Structures are given as structure tokens and as C-alpha cells.
Length: 342
Image (cartoon, rainbow, N blue to C red; front, side):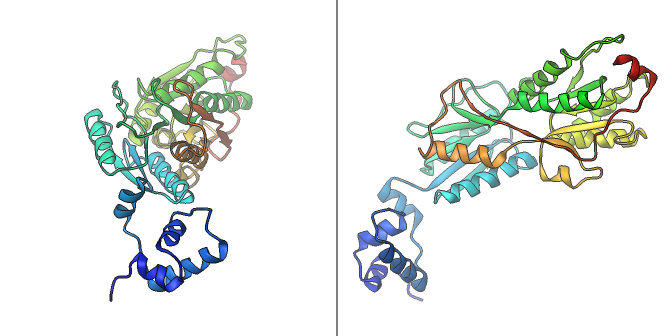
């Protein structure tokens, strides 16, 4: 089959080549009837423009680069999916790469994307202390793990954590522990601070309320180990509720409770953070703080493409989280120690 070109489309549609080009680029100057006729011919001939040639001519690749630390993390996988949908709404595609949470690999990925002539880059920086050098002339925006010297968009992690811990406190829990994220992680630090915000303002009663937290990576096994550590305390000191800084940690914590024979939620309430799809599929279904991933991705894409104002450096755009109440949380049992703590 002979490959059809843009000139063939123009000839069949009875328009100039420039008109076909404007239709392909969604230029508003093309009459609606002409646009429909050209698109019908494109479909009839099966014409597919060469994206590289188009980018060379227009200086616009219609590609957005995304760098994430770990594709096996369901949170980052969902971020990529939401960004791909948002990019498609703006007639763009995405190229995503993993830095494997390594600063050297991260710099390499940024250089590769610059070589692909992407129109902008979304990056979730790796956790190690380092600086990011944006490729010259390319807009770059950070997501989730915010940096002070780059524009960024993220969930309101501190506010979301406050919602979670306040919910547990209103259920009647006072011995509320926290599985914090890894040290040095901006989301982890913000979520831990949200936990402390609530714990330090709870009425003390006759039994003084002490915050109890342990740092752990955001993955399942780390959550399981942290949960086992917290639940190994004597029964009258054991937390009746645990706020985990990620859904993966929370799911690992549920397994630790199961291993110790602690029923959920009768013996322990668990609340996670992120709202990954798996949180609504496990048994019991996990109560969690849901991040507005679609809104965050749309904001990042629109900022890169100039469809909304780029956030100011040092003043990231934060999006409100929501609490999804499910089966892993309930009021605590009325034990003597718990009553005294109130």
C-alpha cells in the first residue's frame, strides 16, 4: 500500500497543504465544515503525520516528559496514568522514565527527555538530598515531592494527615500511633507534622497523651515491620489506632495485626494515605486519605503548556484531600485504660 502524505490529503479535500496542517494542529482559524472535511479525508486515507517531522517544523513536539522514582509503586503508576489522560486532553502524549530513586539516573533521564525535544517535564524527585538542574529552555514542574527552588503541585499532605488523625480522635481513640514516611521525604515530613498537629492539641485528661511514631519506607514490607513494632507494646500501652503515611504501609500494618491475632477494626483501627485502587479491594477495605490525582496531574500539564499560571517558586499549589471511610476503622473498645485517657 502506498503511503499517503499531507499533499494527498490536501488534494483529496480540495484545500491547501497549510489548511491540513492547521487542522492537524487544532488551529481555531479553520472553518468547521472544512475541518470536518479534512478529518474525513485523513481517516479515509489512513494518513498519519510523522511526529518527529512535525516537531522539527513547528518547534513543538506535543510530548510531555515524566520522571518518577519507581514505577512499581502504585501511587506513581496512577500519577502517570492521570498525566497521560490530562496530556491527551491537550493533544499531547507522554514519555515516562524511572529514576529508580537515584539522583545520577535522574539527571540522565532529564537529559534524555531534553534530547527528545519534549515540551515540558513533570518530575517526582528522588529522596536523596540533591539539586535538580532543569534543561535549558524547558519548563519543569515538581509533583508530590516538592523542592524549594522549583515550581510544584501536590496534595495538601499536612492537611490530609490532620483530617485522618482528627477523624480517629473523634471516634474516641487517644492512643493513636503513626507510621511516618522515610526521613528526608517532604511528603513524609508534612504528614508527620499533620499527625503531631492533632495529637498535641487533644485534651489530656487523667492520662497524658504522648505522640508515638516510627519512620519507615512507604512500601508494604516496611509498613508491616513498623506495624509489628508498634503493636508489640504491652496491651495497656498498645495503640488502638494507627495512621500510616501511605496505603502501602497501612496494608502492611493490617498484615502485622493479622499475624498478631489483632482483629480489625475491633482491636485496631488503621487509616492510610493516598487512595490507591488496591485500598478499596482488600479485606477489610482500607479507610484512607484520597489524593486528588486527576486534579494534580491536570494542574501540572496545564502549567507546563501555559494553559494556567505556573506556580511561584517556593509557593506550590496544594490540593485538598478527602477522607474515604471504609471498614478498617471504628470506635475503640471501652477498655478501662481507654476510658481513663479520655
